Each structure stands twice: as C-alpha cells, then as structure tokens.
Image 1 (tube, rainbow, N blue to C red):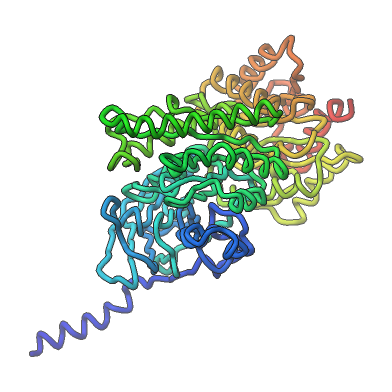
Image 2: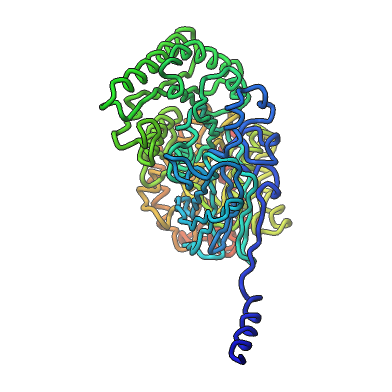
Length: 584
C-alpha cells in the first residue's frame, strides 16, 4: 500500500515535467497560409481549391471534387524534434484501389539548410474516425537543433479537410510560411492529376513536380470530370499562370472523343483572351496497351483528336502551344494499379516526363549541373524565403534600373538583419550617394552561394522589368565548398541566367572582395574570372583596390571585425570601386 502510494506521488510529481504540446491552426496564423491554390482571399477559411463563385457555375461533380485538398500544402518552420498533426476529414478514409495514406493521409518533407529535400516518416493512427493523428518523431537537424528546417505538409488527395492543427512541444519554434507570390503552373486534369493512385500524398505527380522544380503548382484535377468544360476554362483564365497544363484526355475517350476538338479549341481561346502563358496539351496513355487493343484504340483516337485541334490552333496563329506526347510519357507495364491510374512508379515516370518538358519550356541555368543545381538555403537565422518574396514585391512596386545580386556583404549595405538601425543607416549613405537618381535594388541574401542566386533568378527576381545593369557579387560563400575552377564555372552559369531573364541589361561580374587569410586565393579566383570574360560583353569589376595594403593584406580598419563584412568605411570603398560602372 505504501509502495503504491509512493509510486502515485512520484508520478504526480513527474507529470508537470512532461513536454506540453502547443497546437496552432494555419488558417488562424495569417493570410495565404495554404499553398498550391489561387483565389487565396476567397478561400481563406478552408482547404478548398476553386473559388466559391464557381458553385452553381461549374457542374456539381466538379464543385464537389474541388472541396478535396489535392495538391494543397501547409509550410512551416520549426526546430522541434517531433511534429504532430491532428485533423478531421468529411469523406471515406480509403478506396478499393487506393490506401488511406493517399486518400486521407498526410506527407511531410523537410528542406535542410542547403536546400536539400528530406522525407519524414510518420506514425499513422486511424483509430478515431473523427480525428486523424500523425506524428513525425526523432527529427534530426544536421545544422544544429536550434536552427531547424522548413517543412511542407501535403494534404489529402481525395478528401475534404474540415479542420487541421499542427503541434510541437512548448519551447520550440513553430512559424507558418505564407504562400509565394510567384506565378504557378496550373494543372487541369483527371483523377491522375488529382492523385489517384499514389500510396501517399507526396507521391502525386503534381506534388513531385512542385518539390523538384520549386515552382508553385495549382492542382485542378477533378476525378472522372475533366471534360474540358467551358466554365472551368473561364475560371482557369482568371489565374496569372506561368504555365497551363491541360491533361483531360483520360476522361474524354470512348464515346466522348468527339467532344475533344471543339472543346479544346474553345478552351485554349478562352485562355488566350486573358493570358500569354505557355499552354501544354498532354496526350493519353494506358499502360495495359500491350494486352488490350481496345485500350490502344481509345487512347490513340483521343490523341488524334487533340492533335487535330492542336494543329488547327497553331494554323490559326495561337502562340506558345505545346504537346507532351504519348512517347514522352513513356509509361512501363509496371506503372499502373488497374491499367488506368498510376501507382507510385507511374507517378514518378509521369513527373519525370513533366519535369523534362518544363525544363524545355523554361530553360534555367544550372538545372543540368550537378555542382550548381539551383537551390534554396537557410543557413542564417533570417527568413530566406520571406526575403525572396520581398524582392518580388519590390520589383512589382518599383521597376529597378540597376540590380545587385549578392550575399550578406550586399545585403547589409542597405538592409539590416543583425545590425542596429543606426548602423544600417550609416552603411546606406554610400549606397544612396552611388545610386543617386537611379532605382537600384539590393538583392543580397546573407549566406547565399551561387546555386542560391541561380534559384532566385529562376524564380522571378529578374522578371517583370527591364534593367539597364545587373551586378553579380556572389562567390565568396562558395570558397569553402568549391574549387577555384568550379567557382568560376558557377559565375558563368549566373551570367547565363541573367542573360536569359534580362537580355538587354549590361552585365557586370564583380570580383570576390578580399577577405582575411584568403587574400591570395581570392586573387587567383578573380584572375581566372577576368581571363574567362576577355572578349565577351560582360565587364569584370575588380574589387581589390583600396581594400589591401602594400603587402597585399587586408586593411582591417575597413571591416566590421570578421575580416569579411565591410564597415561604413569599407562600403565607401566598395562604392568607389563600382562608381565608374554605375555612372557609365
């Protein structure tokens, strides 16, 4: 008896020590917290995909399916060792050919400090039908527990989310990340686009394309109901898209094939009334063709009708219309669940075909490069993605004449991060004097490397305006991870990226600024850069003058104590080195 009483007292004492979970509702965290959709303000109170204005306009089946959360996700930052999610859905948990983890489940991916994706395993509990619980445990942060990662939580593919909360232990950060302002890839398609029959939500091909290209994707897949309806096309036309994907043929085979020509022509013209974005038409394919001539006939007939419509539209002068062909999809016999819907292998093959085509339509420097593949990063405590969104906003609000793409050295020149406001104001004096009378945008990001600059350019930071001059100041943060030759190659990729997005701008490649104990290596890298640029239309800017003494060593009085970042005097020297190129 005494032993039991003592055990009870001990348990009561230990209970308050157990970590308490703090739960947060993404919808209550601010605006635009649901990723992967348009009409954000009209949909701010739930997890639907079509504007409420579509009810009664589109067919009832389409409206009902639009309430399912396919392609939607929640993004957040946390440093917690485990993430919990609890939520409720309104429909059945699974289907005969698709598991509950795909129909009603969640999938979590982390992006680490260097922009690499890490899938997170979970414990899935469906014991309570009114509340579904996920827990992602034992998360490891290779850059230190205090910093954490960005996470993306993919929502159910075939169910309506009634409510959802994310939880972490008290004492850990949990911050939701708003949806990007970038123009999205918009997919209008069938159950295959909606996600059938992925084993888990992250394996839907639209979600794979989103993760691996970094582009936002709006999934408007409507299972069994992608009939190229005029009403749906009119809602698509409201979207400021980067690319429209029309992948409806699996729902328009057999007796519906005769609808394709007229409906597709009308739909494409509706889009062209509002948008000049590329339009990608996707051909149909059944993996069971080798054993079913009927299946072959069905998809070949629908493909012929779409090809006929495509050729007629091109002949009429419709621009930027493209095909993803049956041969490019290249499904294998192991790709399908029941001959129609892809399994995970099929989803992977489908995504690969789309990614290849997207890279053809939007060729970006570095996407074929194993060293400098464009990536995000989060190596510094500031919010890297929020700064990217700030760049997009600045460019929309004020078109720049001059852009400086750099790292923290550029960043700190005008935009305080860890510096006090008075110090930032002093630093800015030389910037304001240098660019007086011109609109110059500081696109410096702390801790950025060349691959991060490539990602930012690919994702809109040089779009929507015509700059007169672009100065490239990246490279110093690559010195710890790349050879001199690799680093110079990366600079050439950046120059290529600028040419693609700002073909009329004069490009200036700025040499790496001298840094403590690396003076000789910096000089060697800069010599290689200058040599590579001889005979080109790119101007090399030497940043060494004024920063080195007679022995070739750093003038410490020009730096903020770390031998890397300039102080007020140092920024004045940098401005002097740039002045002739800014004024010419």
